[in-house]
Length: 291
Ligand SMILES: [Fe+2]
Image (cartoon, rainbow, N blue to C red):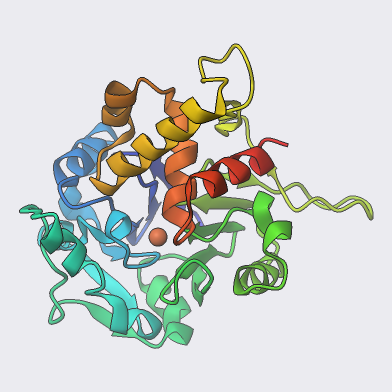
């Protein structure tokens, strides 16, 4: 068990490269058009794209699978557990609608599919000790990657700090199952990782974000470059949502809106991980996060 985890940020989505002796697994890609940035990001690690063994997609929303086939054409195979099979083309219409010429649909003939319960066996071929778990909540095709050493990759499953707000829903049921595994670190598609401290007494904490968390992106605080008036804030959130729909990355949204990167990151994550959420819902959740 010697997996090495690289967190990559070449698009608006966090991707994770899990490196081990027998191979390299990439968990999630970015929007279609991010392939050059993906290659540059691997270049910084001195890892040739061709050396990637396989790709696992947390769920087939456009910001997680957009560059998958383009990357797969360079060598790695896309692993598709059976529970995801009906969804692999779910984003094709999104890219068609925006006229995205960079998008390459998943080639059904080249994927590797398997019953999700056989995930451990498949991962082992690449030297990874872990499991692939069906974790619906954000979407029906959501899966999570579990490494036996305690790392958990959940894609867009709502972050742990929101867990209590989702009690009684599929999201909380999924989290309850995941927490039984005893994760040490949780890696998200759009948030900073959560390091879970061992429970030492009855006052159990579900998790504590690490120092890299974008918690300073609180929209309500003063002196941090964020607007203080709600109307202005709402307008800014709307702008960020529109830019996100266009697949812009944080840097570009910064240039267009003048907002702080941490704030944009928060809005994007809330927007991308909560289906049908509105401006006020995003602001409410940012407030919950920063309590
Ligand atoms: Fe999503």
